Image 1 (cartoon, each protein chain N blue to C red):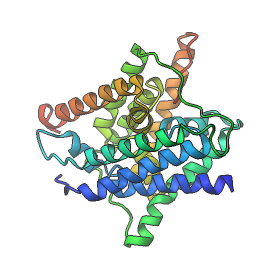
Image 2: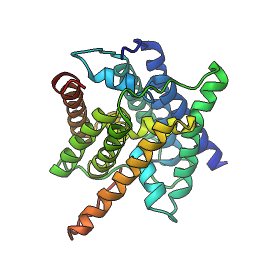
Image 3: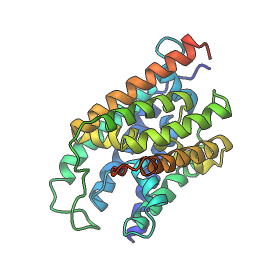
Image 4: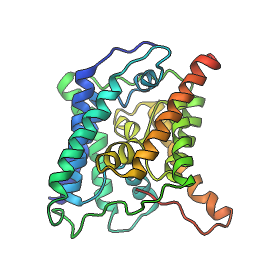
Length: 143
Length: 146
């Protein structure tokens, strides 16, 4: 499935993601990691950190609705894989980000921006693993 | 006031993810398919986000404390170990299979798209299992989070 190259929309989206990370640090003093925020909201209930995580998640989930208000449609979500692959992938992602202590937002954006060697190492490894996985699925297995 | 401000921060993130293409697995997977239908857009997402966060953090972290808390709470660990690298490799494999990462999928939940809901259910199940396995194996280490 071919997708259109969208440098300006992607750059604008990236700038907003970066701004959100800076605002969260300025207001709450925390890194904007989707893994930690989701896991904390679900598994670490009844702590002082639950409120801000839930407020943040509610805001995130409202994003597509605001885009729809402005542009008239939800952002495109095209899933080229089977539902089974999607769910197996989800399980693997959940396990990986838990052991790896973060994902694209926590390590890839916030950690890299802090020049954390740990996050730079994690980001290089997961990007390489994703490139390799997509190559194997699409060009070796022929999915 | 505090919750409204944090809701709006989440909203900025959610709008950013929505227009960036990170919530679209077809686009994400094409970024990683250099040998096929390559779409380099996501390099602009990561580039824009990291540059803005890098510059913004310099200003913010020079301040004595955040607005709503007494101290900045930055991840303290500096250890680059097998757990970090192995977990990250596993994450990359799953991302390459599904095309969603956690930060891309969470805002996309707001569309009530069935595929997104199924992915997030599997994601949470994976997180839950990963927190259980070390206990089952009777090791003392508990998964840490950022």
